[in-house]
Image (tube, rainbow, N blue to C red; front, side, top):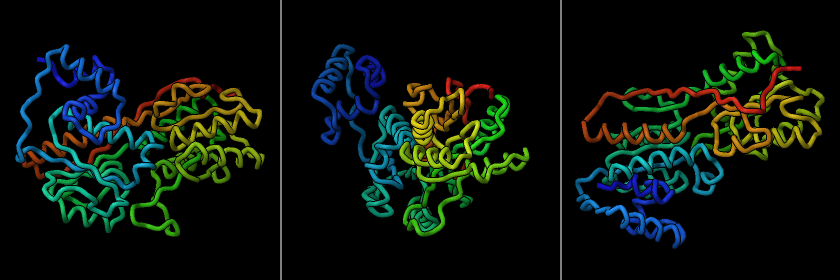
Length: 335
């Protein structure tokens, strides 16, 4: 019997898109040609829709700490959401979504069976959500509450491995260009969240007795900010041998700044990113990075919430996902 995944593979779209098209989701924005292609593939494969689940079916909610517009410019969080959506589509799970800007609980239905909170929530917001929902999970945020499951990336080890890699290439003057993040509901005039990437960088450089204070810069997690920070660093005359960017988006800006200043990557400056965004293999040169499997994080999160709701699992998990080095062309041995 044909499945939604079979149709998705044949039509060249995601399982989530197939599910929404087959269910006549008016909120899905796709071209008429794509909609027709999916329906034609379903007919070709002899797909038969399962009966719609009744009200006892599992209802999952996603609450995101950023706006829809911000998500579109951040491949990391977009990948997390797609992982959740594809899991729900494949398992016939009803899914609702709300943003922090809509309010703490936003438009999530009152009968939601499980909630996945994506991003950085303030202690106040997290506490309110934990009180409201019994089956709740936080993605990309550590929560010390003993009864709450969390999944985060092991950025601490990722930075250590990235810097060790650069040192093996002979680099010692290594810059860190990062971004600042603030929890939901907190104004920008207060202290930002502590970034494990920055903390790991400082710890590693101190351990190896390497100078770093004049090589550390933070702005925002965007290509524009990476460009501005790297330009300022080069203009200061303190040109590094290598740069570790806290995200691939920042690294893209770093690469452009190096080129615009008449320098070459990797001949003059090696550059590394973190995330392995879709764009990373297509930069010039292609970007060496630490792959943070955001899509898989979303899938794992949805699976844990679904399992907890169906199996009455009460034991929380504190999961940390490892990152993997992806070697490309933006790093080379020090001349």
